[in-house]
Structures are given as C-alpha cells and as structure tokens.
Image (cartoon, rainbow, N blue to C red):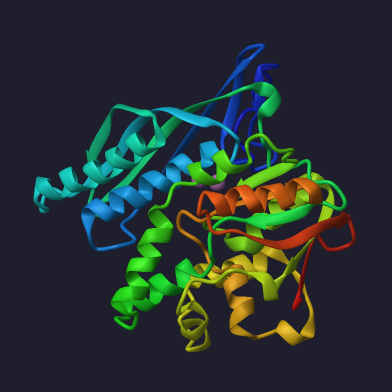
Length: 318
Ligand code: CO
Ligand code: CO
C-alpha cells in the first residue's frame, strides 16, 4: 500500500488514510457516494447460505459509513470442476440479501479459479453531513456493539464437527443478518464514530477507531455478548489462527484477571460479517439501546471512550 501513488481530490471525503470501511466521494452538496468491495472463500458448506453471508458482509461496509446501499455488482471466482448450479445458488443467496437491503443488483463478473470466492462491490448513498467515519469518538462516549462475538471460534468448531445443529444455525443467522437494522435504529442519533467488526476482531477494529480518534477505548469483557457455545469451544483451544495475529496487532492493555481466559480469546476472534460498533454520547446511547431493542437488534454497551493514554485499547473484566 505504501508504494501506491497518493490521490488528492477535495471531493474524496474518505480515502485510505484512516483504514475506514469504504471510500466516500462527494458528488453534490447533499450527496456522497460510498464505494466498497469485499469477497472471500466459503465460510459454510451450503452455497446459498454462503452467498447470503458474503453479501451481508460486503453491504455492511456501507452501513458502517451511515449510508444506504443502492447498487451492487457480483464478484465471483469458480472452478470448472464444480456444477454451475452451485454458483447459481451462491449468486441467488447474494441477490436475496441485496434485495433485502433495498439495493439493486446490476451484474458482475466471474472468473475461473481453483477455489470458489464470492462477494460484492457496493455503491451506497449518504448525505455528507450524516457520514459516519471510524474516527471522531469523544471522551465520555459509550461503545455499543450490535452482534454477538465468537463467530470465528464457532466456525472452527463447525469445521471440527463439534458444534451442534442449533449452534451452527445460530452462527449462520448472525453472519447473514444485515447491519441495515442497526443503522435504521440509530440513524437519527448523534453517532461520533462507527465501524463494523470483521477480520481483525473486536480488538483490532476498536484499535483502528481509537487510533484514528486519538483516544483510548476501554472494553469491558464482562459485558461482551458472545454467541452460544463459543466460550466453551475457545476453552477447548478451538481458536482460529487469525485470532493470534489480531492479538499481536492490537497491543491491548489487559488486566491480569483476563489473561489466558476464553473471554480474552473472543476479543481477538476474527468475525465474518460481524456487527457495528458505535461511539456515541451517553444520552444517545440510551435511546439507541431502546430503538435497537424495539427492532430486535441484539446490542450491548461494551465500553467507553477516554483521553488518549500510552495504550489505545484497555481490556478490563467489568
Ligand atoms: Co468494515
Ligand atoms: Co470490508
């Protein structure tokens, strides 16, 4: 990335500097385009479900900027040796999520490759004044998370053949759930910063928010919502490899009580299509929780924002 030329365009509201979820380009005083692309290899066996999850994940980066997805294009890779029906099912799952998002799917591109891959390029709309960035968190803000954690651990247990049918279904439900509903619940409130929780885990994405905001963010491990079964599997050592990379990357200051616990593993667990994290003032947080609960969006206050210290993320057991 460091070798790429710099693009200076005053209309580019969000570029690459702050590791935000998507690029944002202003086209008029009251309209900005959000542009994002995301795709990955299958995380579940069922092709239709994989399509749903990959699409929900790609759409999420538009929601994380406070925008509405408008236009989506498929991006796919598929091997010749598999039945084209499987690709059809993947695309159908993605199309259904785009429809649920209220956006239009207008084509795409598939190449031949050994391992299937699928995702979307999504264009969204946002009013430039209502754009959410991953920075701007203020001292005293609370942090709200809108999906339970532990999806990576649970998927590892599924691959090992250990997860129950119920746990597997629950993980699929969480991964394919659109962050649209979380956005709708809070869009009228004062949101200082927002991002979605994906491959870098809760700690990694909180770190990005903290660094870009020049603040220290405290996470209360005792308040983290965790998907059923994940703590048990983490205690059995079923922690995905990415979690170890995330741990090194995030450099979290952790209270000794949590060191080496399954709950600590969950903080670094890479998520597939995870929830949104909002930083917002306490009064708005209270309204957000009420609105989110009214729409049945799972949510919890998981921490708060303070002045920047020598570390950017603090993990305590509260
Ligand atoms: Co993102
Ligand atoms: Co992304």
